[in-house]
Length: 174
Image 1 (cartoon, helix red, strand yellow):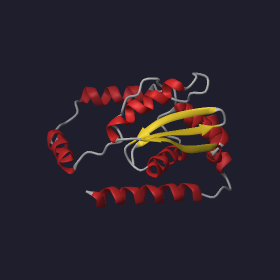
Image 2 (cartoon, rainbow, N blue to C red; image 1 turned 135 degrees about the vertical axis):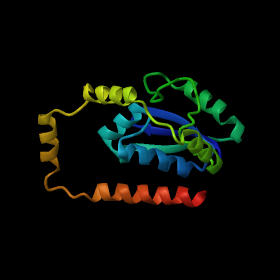
Image 3 (cartoon, rainbow, N blue to C red; image 1 turned 30 degrees about the vertical axis):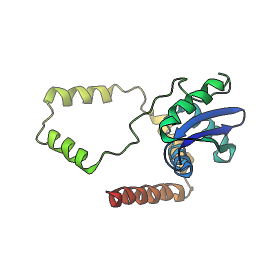
């Protein structure tokens, strides 16, 4: 079922649309939020600060598949800037969530087959990584390590179980 949905967190709102079942889209949001990899930084920070229970997923409107982006834009335009969690006020559809068909993956593989990276390219990547200012300092690494002492790894194991399950589902779908 296609349509527009809202994720509310306190007084803030995120508007989105989907052409898949709403439950699947909500699960996808939660998956990314729990991993800390959600594309929307505002929503990720809200989740990190207040937790999963603070978010409410609501279906705003169901509509035809070809109308989802138009209706999503309508609802985004209705929100005041101070409560909007959407990063952009213009709706666009990112393609990073759309899996490639088996045929397309094979074409990509064939196109990349036999390509070798130049030594200059490899060296440049190494230099860039060495200059990365976002690496943890020794002090922060020590504090992170100390904070994990005595904690169970069950959350990490749950994540990997879920990851493997999704990967198998995608492979079986093809």
